[in-house]
Amino acid sequence: MRITITVRDDDARRDGADPCELLRQWLDEQPELRGRTRRRTAATPPPGEMGAATDALLALLAPGGVAAAFAGAVVAWAQTRRGSQTITVRQADGREVTIVSTHVKGMDAAQTAELARRLTADLMSPPPPEEPTGTSGPDPRPPE
Image 1: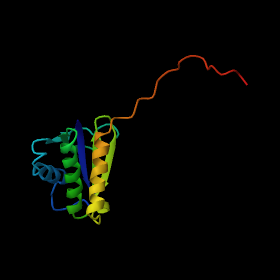
Image 2: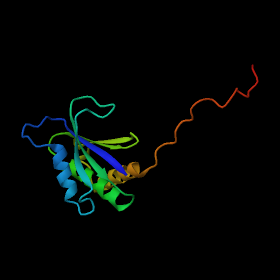
Image 3: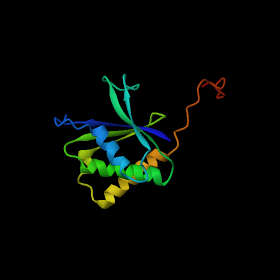
Image 4: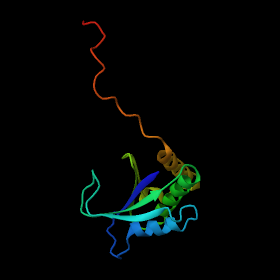
C-alpha cells in the first residue's frame, strides 16, 4: 500500500528545520520502516490542496507489523514535537487521517496505543464500496 504523508508546521518555525524531513529521519530510524519512505516534492499541489510546492513523504506499507510500526512511530513523533504540527496521512484512494501534535502530547500510554491502533486500522481498512452509477430501469413501485 502506498501512502502520502504531509507535515505542516502550524507555528511557522524560524529555525529552518523542515518537519517533513525530520519525520522521514524519525521513520528511517525504526528498523521495520527503514527504506520504506522517500521524499517527494511536487511542483504543483495534489488535487484538493491549495498552495505552491508541496513537500511530502511517500511510504510503502504492508499489512500487519509494518503498518502498526508506522502508525506507532508517527504518533510517537507527533508527541515529541514542540509547537504544533499537523500530520496528514493520505491513502491512494483519497482517504486521509490527520494528527495534530498539540492534541497528542498529553496522552498517556493507553491513549497513545489506542490512537496508533486506530490509525493502523484506518490505514488497513479496505476502501468503501463505490456508489452505483446510472439507473437500473423504471421505478417498480406503483404510482400513488
